[in-house]
Length: 238
Picture (spheres, rainbow, N blue to C red):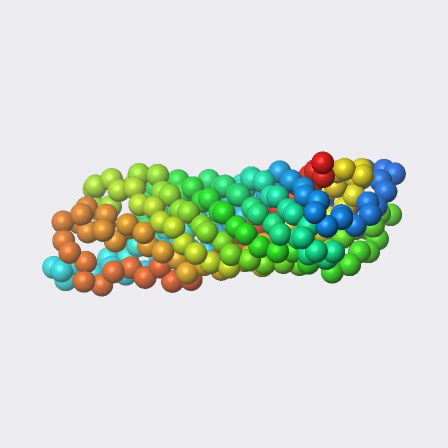
């Protein structure tokens, strides 16, 4: 996993916003009543583990190594929540990022490959309590749920032939967050989320075999992937 300098700067900024709010005179809102809902557009930075890193063997005995390392990328999206019990909220999330994945083909470093990552998630949040932050009462919450992750690569060359693989993977996520009031209808919300996914290879093996012109006898193994996202957004309560 590669950490880019701009990603590190954005990370520091997100933490600073989450921990040192500067909006003066805000009042803590009363707990959201059951049946209320909210929406929160957000911006953040995400760090993915190596998407694929393994050996593939072809019918002619050729054994090659493939590495695709997404590194870090800016993430943007929107979350929506519905309070269904006094301390419980159902949350849906749609997020998107585009990063330049490092591509290594059989030990040779190739030009970076564009990787689009889209996540659709459903889960629940539980209010753990509130505490003072910068003179305001902030709400601390934990949660988790299911994640559906879509990966789509820009065209890149394997053995001189362009391929464009994509995949869909199912996983789980855990989230910890902090909600800081700004006005009765607006608040600053910061979340840290870790997604653990059993990575699907999608059509990658098939497209590599076509480009190589040989059947695969030892395919790539997707393995377990992790995706860590730090984000900050503005929660709007109609």
